[in-house]
Length: 119
Image 1 (cartoon, one colour):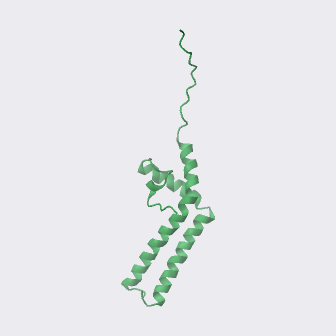
Image 2 (cartoon, helix red, strand yellow; image 1 turned 45 degrees about the vertical axis):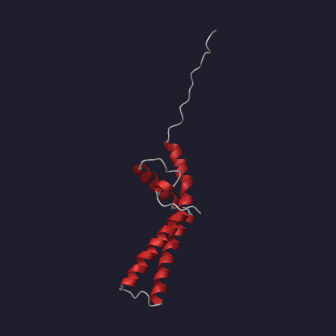
Image 3 (cartoon, one colour; image 1 turned 90 degrees about the vertical axis):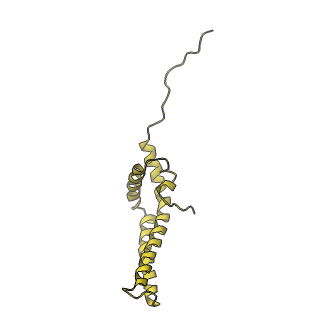
């Protein structure tokens, strides 16, 4: 499984300016949120984070209000968001490719008739 560290590591966005990468990603990502794979990964993120926090509280590693509680909360949320994004990117990539192809101008055609030089 390829790890996508940022927008520039997604092949469909590579080579675009940062502002256009962000705009294209947001457009396609919000469209992909309708797919069960994407919203399921984010629902799983919430469940994973809640589970880690409950387990840490049960084992007295992170009493509510302690610094350990906040470390587990922030660490669990960071890990869960990272994993959810890794699952979402492969679902968004086909939308990115289609959208980028629609935005790029078609290749120039040479419709002129070339007469071969006369000898």
